[in-house]
Length: 223
Image (cartoon, rainbow, N blue to C red; front, side):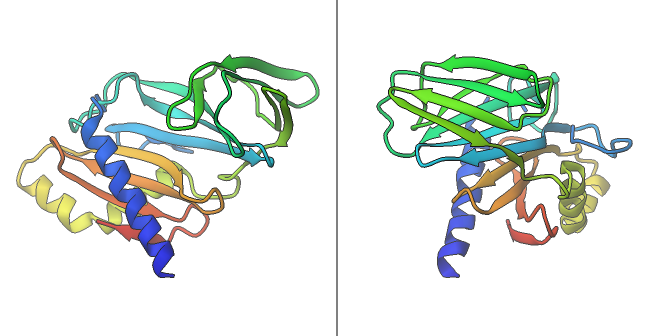
């Protein structure tokens, strides 16, 4: 239990550093959006893995250039694919073919890796069901599942966080301070448990943040 709590606290700390270091920062709504100042959101998060590779495909909206400045500007749709080699990270490149339905497919090649992960943006206009990954002499066909199927949406997560931070946000509003920028991301430390990371960003390194279980809505950790 102590190890799990430490892992969650570490995840929040790492993301906090990323938010303060990156340079300009709307949430997925099933109906009308309740706020406009959302710089990042996750609408779907497909995952799968084999003995050789772990894969995630994230679809959502985010700023073209993220700056943690309290304002959401130039928010556009995105789809990010990340392939993580599990046995070796010495591949010169990784190729993939994403499949969906009976005829839909999308292929590509990733030639550079950051921290052991091969990642790139793609234009994906269908629901992915599987992906074939090829690198070196290794080939894996991996089934994909959306961990947010039947789970809370980004909008739900924002509403939970907004309620939890209600006193602080109300006080800031009464003092005439600007509305905070909202940043939502799916994170995991073990590829078994996934959480919404929701951050209300002020000016500079001023932020409120929490982890929320997307299945139950429980607040796992906050600061």
